[in-house]
Image 1: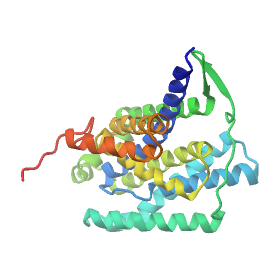
Image 2: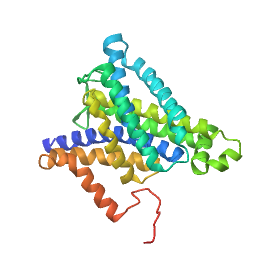
Image 3: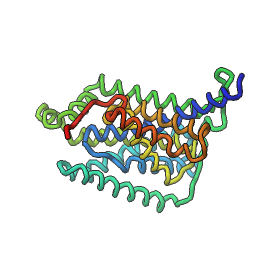
Image 4: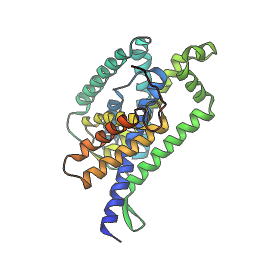
Length: 294
């Protein structure tokens, strides 16, 4: 087995695993934007809150990882529901810039609350797969990376089935396409919007709990929002499948650049590719064309 091939295979798997996390965050942002036309810059800070909450429950309470996942996921979902129902709903009908500034303010408040409640120091915790590897085609692959890929693809499939084959999912789609028509047909649009926020919050929580063991439990995890936004634009703004594809591509580009290109390339390569895509195909990979004459 060629050593260069082994390195390439491991980098590819790591890129897909990290990209799957970006995709989860991107899908949550897309869900909220499609439903409420609010670009939620606080999404990454819900991820930070979930990571610190999982760390506290695992290290201080002693709960196993699989017990923590549903607890933290449900808790972040409730918080996200409340953010929309209590705060974001009040600016309905206002310019989109108002929503941007409001979610940025919420992001700083959540981040500050996390620092005050858990401390500013970076933390870490293990999962049942930490340090374990499996051999695939003669290449050693971290089990945690494989689990992350499986969980992310499972969530993407579950969201697709939910929106295609459940009454609630169809109602959410209808409300996102035309809120007035949905309301006239008996859909409780405001409650559905809050449920979309809750659903997006759960995806952020799962992303945070699986991302933290790969890096550290740190407030800087909110920066994943920037990677997720790049994934959204690359995949096609407003497209859930596009967010999935864009997230994985950003993860792969990032990992390849970190290994095969000069130092510092890892941080800029995804955005260079993004600029090229925007120039050649402004709507992204799976986005709809919305041209404007100037």
